[in-house]
Image 1 (cartoon, rainbow, N blue to C red):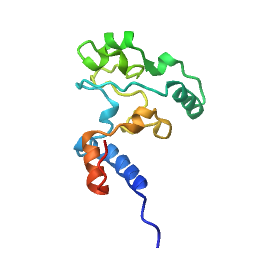
Image 2 (image 1 turned 30 degrees about the vertical axis):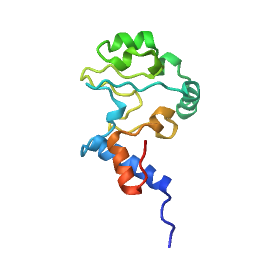
Image 3 (image 1 turned 180 degrees about the vertical axis):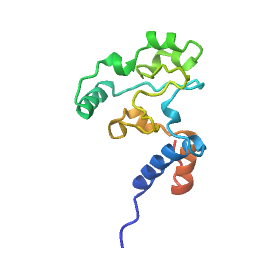
Amino acid sequence: MSEPPSEAELTNQIIHYTCLKNCYGKKGNAGACCTIQDRDWIIGPITDANEFLERLKKHFGKNFRFDEVFIQYNEGKKLFPEKTTWQNPKHYPALRVLMDQEGIYPCPFLGSSKECTIQSIKPAICSAYLCDHLKTVISNVTGNPKK
């Protein structure tokens, strides 16, 4: 008989499934936290920017310039002047988003099926982020509330 999964393994499985199938508690939704859409949201600050660039280099086998991957305050505040999170310099550098016609503004590493193409090397902020729905699901399953 095999060992049951540890709480960390179970939590990671819950996160993976929920983010790909039931993001923000919406059935069939995926990758919403990897997009801006109409929310006052920013993917930042990226606290491990230089390390992330190194991981990208190893992952894709090519160099990325800082400004290809990240947005600094002066640029970001102009991109979304109506969003207060983008007006706060403490949220930078932020992960660059694609300026698409649909107004979804996805992370450039979000795949066409809304899966993270850099799951194993993603920035620390992406690994640490848990939406309120995900915190509730984890708490209900593990009995351990997440903050």
